[in-house]
Image 1 (cartoon, one colour):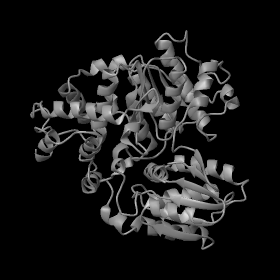
Image 2 (cartoon, rainbow, N blue to C red; image 1 turned 120 degrees about the vertical axis):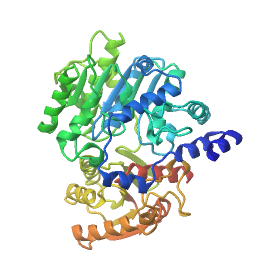
Image 3 (spheres, helix red, strand yellow; image 1 turned 45 degrees about the vertical axis):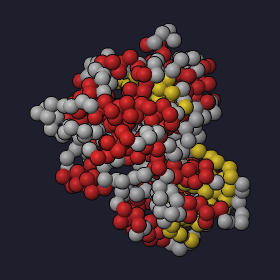
Image 4 (cartoon, helix red, strand yellow; image 1 turned 30 degrees about the horizontal axis):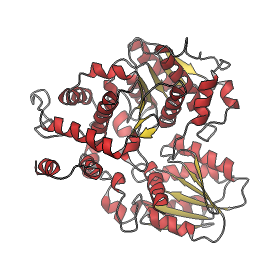
Length: 488
């Protein structure tokens, strides 16, 4: 209660909104307790989101006005969402909303209109409109025992609520929503009548929430399918996972279509690098053209035949797509930075293959900047090594934390309470990674451990020669690095 009254009395701008939002993060101890208990997400998550929506003034049926394209998957769902939004923009739809996660530099990146993150002023205005409505309303504690007076939804749920509020208030005509985790019980899954649903490549991730097998994960992902809403997925899904997705589609009264890598896309220079992005771009074509046909911008969607004719404007949308932190190349002086926030087995293998292909023809010395604080970092490092060592031998490796600054502080938008402060302070993960690399590659290159991204960046930039630097393992690492670049 003290925190709420302080917010009302103080000036409430963007920094105050970010501070309030950060207070909604689950701390590390709570997350670990939930993992140990085996308490996975359940239907109550959806009921609570419906109740939070009611308390800020909406019936969930109103969200259907947003003409949603809903996207889930393990790898590539953010890139696919960016491709879809870019295609839609080529058809002059007045206002296109895009909701994605996580963010890189600013939380405002999660809520975009026409490709631009919402302004600080509007973010603060709408943030506190939602905050104040939740403060002034109550729930029936018999049905929602956790919703005690003045309680708020968690970080991601709050942002999901906020996105619906912003997109409706700003009059968005079509919105692309990336699922946070899973699908069935994800906070975005209160959408009832999406124009199209898509599932990107499946893999094993978030097992403490979604399950330990590809079948359990596919069941969760398939939870976004809705009656009579066309559903699409990529080709070459694991057969066990595909079978479950098809079964889920039948349960929900829709048909699941597999989208090939379109031949026409092979001739396009995609706005996001990486050969594997052609799979995501193809899925985006199917989703976007289905939405465009539903809104009568096209006579019919592009078919799911690999030789299908794709309209020129759709291809232009793919070429114009921009998505920082995914197969991104930055030239800074004599250093070429290859940046990808890959953090799953499948994505780290894809990103490592992309870097190896780009860097193998370069005679520059190679540097790896790596971290992953919450998943099995050693396993991801092994995946990276397997994909790169035959093509790109690293001369120098830095294992860093995700702390932004040498002072030990995070950038305000990048504060994280869901990792162990003790582990971070003691560089436990980083020292373990350094030891793991020696096991993988011997002592052929120099390894270094740093307590902050700023420190790591400073070490690299002191090299007096051209370098190729591969930055990967975490979107939080990538976001912090971009913040450090901005300051410089």
